[in-house]
Length: 339
Image 1 (cartoon, rainbow, N blue to C red):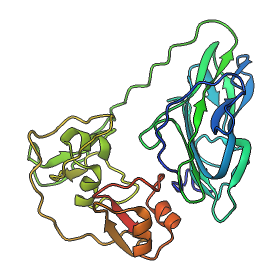
Image 2 (spheres, rainbow, N blue to C red):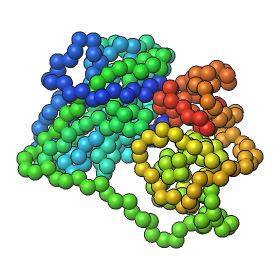
Image 3 (cartoon, rainbow, N blue to C red):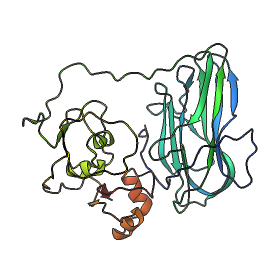
Image 4 (cartoon, one colour):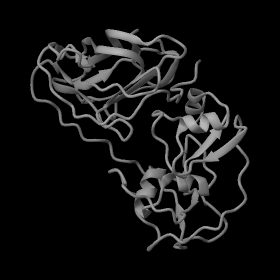
């Protein structure tokens, strides 16, 4: 069984564009559009319908990333590959999936994340189908199929050319109507507190100690960073955490004094100590994780391409190893594995 959701993030540049509604299939000449096709469709309960993600009027396309939302009380995504764990959608064939960044559908949250890129191939020109989604009707109602903005993709759709540069585009959402009657209300499932004893993080008493944070269920580096106004990558560096930056319940983190400015909106974890984090005395540099010949901490002025040249490593290999989805977006204090 192939490993599910290989987190290879290649050639997808950050694109901050407003989502513009377009009527029918008439697009401005030369404009690149990422859209749901058909824009509207109807099915009965337990019936299955196919919806596509189309890209129109693109030039030199190398990589594409889309993030969608739907009402999971009305629709259910049918798994396109039962040989792998989880639920996936199908590649539409417009791009060869040499690198699969994401392919995940969550029928509880009502989200779809899909990202692929070609390697050592010519760019794609024209129009085509990026992905195919099979929906099953669960209950009467109407579910919008919308492009869901995330931190690395504010519009829900990123396109890049063979040089890793952003391709400007607009998006067009769609909707699926199931049977008739009112649309069920979707209430996100609350976080379930695990039963049983809480793991003891450390024999050293740290409760309330300045500069220490014990990871709780559902917390991330970004949520903790927002709590203290500290760069997430600095927290990762201080605590020897490498990509994909996973945290564990009960893990004790030292919070450094590395201010985070222009903090993007998002979840904020409860603070566990007041005031500004104190300066942290650097400890011994942890050894590189397996598969890394070295580690590198990003400093002001660095770019991923410059780092790849410095260490004589392929840009896309470097991005893939560090789960970087946007070649133009790295952060001061971020710890990179040099493969």
